[in-house]
Image (cartoon, rainbow, N blue to C red; front, side):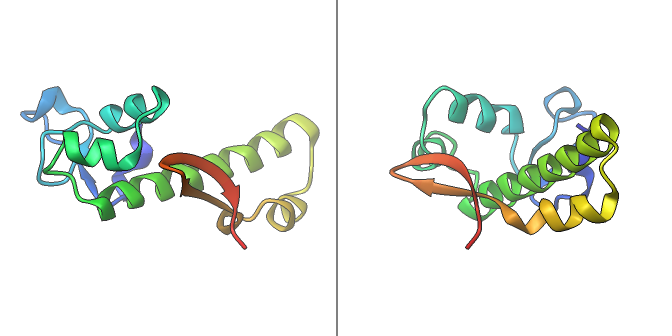
Length: 112
């Protein structure tokens, strides 16, 4: 999870939650967000359960994760199918991947 070092909404300290990545200024690990969303919780529910976490932090983390996933997809296409990098950039630009909230659920969808 080294990818988080570039996300300003999170931090990691060896003396805080055993060095896990947490939302900046809290002791709430990022894993709590992803586990709760996976189990069907909405962002609103998560924020109510962890009042120290701000909506902007959650949005930043989800956007950061979506961009990291887009990069991984491009890498896998290049590695598995030998697709030229330029083709990957036109086909799956990072800005085409976003996480949106619909009916209280987080879903992945292309930006319009």
